[in-house]
Length: 90
Image (cartoon, rainbow, N blue to C red; front, top):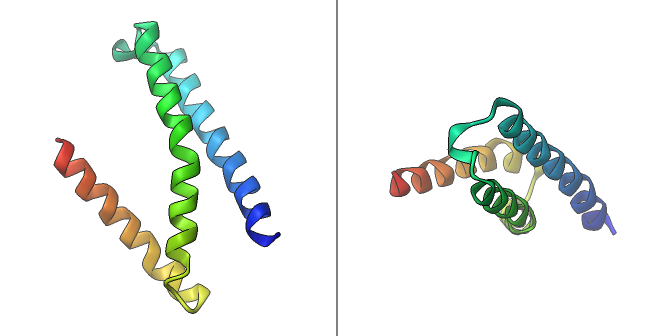
């Protein structure tokens, strides 16, 4: 029951942030997303990213025995994972 409530709250927050990102793209009329298909594909990919990222975070949380350790270490691990992925793509 605990993880279900966490997934509901974080899922709602992630969806809200994604919708804000998409609305900012539409408001500022970003040239890369003028094409409707590019905007729809980006929206779909951003929304499909939410559940796997939440499950990945939940899975990695079991690696730590204390919440303080997880809070201090996991943010750096996630940042490095994102940096490595960005370096590979660019």
